[in-house]
Length: 455
Image 1: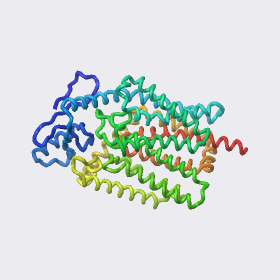
Image 2: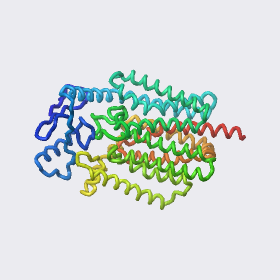
Image 3: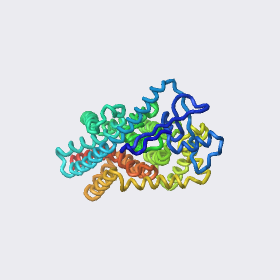
């Protein structure tokens, strides 16, 4: 193992070299990373023990190295690893400024929304543009991942990001003028959901690796499937799509609405499977948060009451879904298993408490060591403002727009569960808030206009 020692001021990846019987010329990988060319330190000891046919202790993760043969030359493989390291360094240098700009955009957008509700006029358009700008920003950071090296200077990357967001916001305003609120929110939600779904299903999560809000080979331990921030984006976008389609079809005949609701249920299950399936990444926290959310959304669109029986049933289905994915994961070779399979083994061995404690601790630390908390604080202040000055406006919006009510109740559910069940903590609801400000702003302003017209 060749490792850089302290001369470097910036953390970077480490070179690992392995040779021996049954090791082909190629790249190492492991169940920890599930990314060819990447392994972690915790994979080393299990690999040594396995090579000597020594039983791996239950306290140690069963993540031995796997070897992927490659027809590339030595120099090509070296160049690929160098490129990976450069990408990781570019990502680490950009993440701070990118996050800071997003936080500032979001807080300012919330502030403008407050002013727009109180003063109206030109502030309405300023608020609309600012919330739309923020809603396009997070996913744009994934789209720009292939250009991180050519835009190494963070300011250059941010300028391009803002340019993409301005174009997205401009298109959204055109859609708003021509087709109205529902289509505008659908456009934003489909953009945010579609980019990540296409990336995972068709490109094996290429945009998730080494992107600003994706997986980092320097600080993360899992490099496949959706990142925690991507989960936040797809989950709130899923809720928005369901709510807006429901709102769009509320005047349709009952039979069409019924078929639409079933189609929306199938759509949500598809999102859940893509997020939780072991062969696509197996997001444990995502499963735990999405299954109850799907239950809540389903009850709302089918206009059923949410009682204790439904809550209990959602808990049972959540456990069964998790067990089902875990059993599927355990049928795969040890080197291919995800953290879901390993967590299932730790439950059987009675060691799951250590994992839960570690993730809970990581989640709690984000509340006092993360810029994301400022978005949550600003949003809570916005909600208090609505409760004090515009409580009747929110009630009227719930009554006029059933889809808006579904979005709010479901959004609260997935936001709280996502925060509680992911080690990224406060960044999960913060990312959801950024996108949620679009429907909140548009529907509240629309309600204000309709109430004025009636009076």
